[in-house]
Length: 287
Length: 264
Picture (cartoon, chains in turn brown, yellow):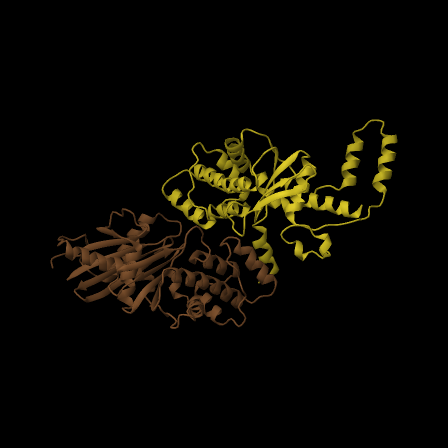
């Protein structure tokens, strides 16, 4: 039996999980997430990891795996690529998944994989934050809508306002123009969701993703975006026949951390490593 | 959503001075000037006669981002490119190249000897490289827009900003601050980044061959002007950059000149 931790350092938040791995029996013991905001990343990593460890109630951790932007964290036993960590984590949460769409604060990435988590295709949005989580967060702020309200409002839209691909910063004036034209908040949000979904559908298409697509990252919780994505993928798949299936999970945001923890357990076993990577100083580590 | 909230949001995009009406009217200015002239009775009579002549609007032309909203017929609307070209020509008659960096877009314009546009390049729906980029950075740093330039000018070792996108640059700014880099060095790098985007537009529009005029709100930012001076010198050799203290009115001036032409 191995106890491992996975820490996924994103651009806006740090996610950590602690897992117990015994062959095919893989259990998530605890998870924690902390927003970085304007703090030093290293201290947020420490805080998130500490919260996950105390929630797990374990005395020692065999392997601490990092992924994402955690270059050389002093806590880490080893580091794993974001795409492999997300592929592995998605498979853990949804074994039928053959692709991952990870929608983070600044970037979106599409990963195609086989049933064992081997990455067969990868593409990331770059250059620009249009359509990212930060972009949607900005728009919600301009509209005075909280994060939790975005999805339900978007689903309630009856006449989505078409939005062409827009800059995350200049969207402020675009949104003001829409509001002053009398467009309803719900219709603006749905229009934005549709524009983002179109971009993500093209991203998934470009790597040949099909079948069951798992959505991870902070925006996976947004049901309005999910509905728009389902529609966009249904449209693009009309010629090829079977529309891809979109799946998300309450722990979607932790997919990268889960994948890292599992890869950590795999490497720990492969290399026959011994000794603890972390021990609870307050706990009496006798077992 | 209330009008005040909207106005407040919109205000953030605009340098405060643009919303201030001129302090004195034409008559008051003339009156004050005449007070300083000795034995001015003859002059005064002439000028007061001229000033008292009732003015009538013989034509008006609308331009700018919101030109479609003006209650003008279509033939009285001109693109901001044409108006900026002509306005810059009126301010500096030798101008052949105009760089206009406004709140939401950046234009590099080539004009002929009459101020008529012969070519232009414009950034498309992207905040990187225009005034809003600096506004976003000011918000990120919890500073006023007017505080950026003095701090950036204090930099001794400007950093090289690697991000293009405004949002990414904001993330890079936070990261560099947390690494302990100096605020002035990062800010100087960000000003340079705005101007670098403009340099590529300038190059694509045909570069700077002769006299060069810088207009728009960002022309009031001394750090941006300094960065432009350096980069222009590196790419086109040392040359004078025309900047009018009234640079933000260049487009309006061009529109007025078009109005006069069509009225004549």
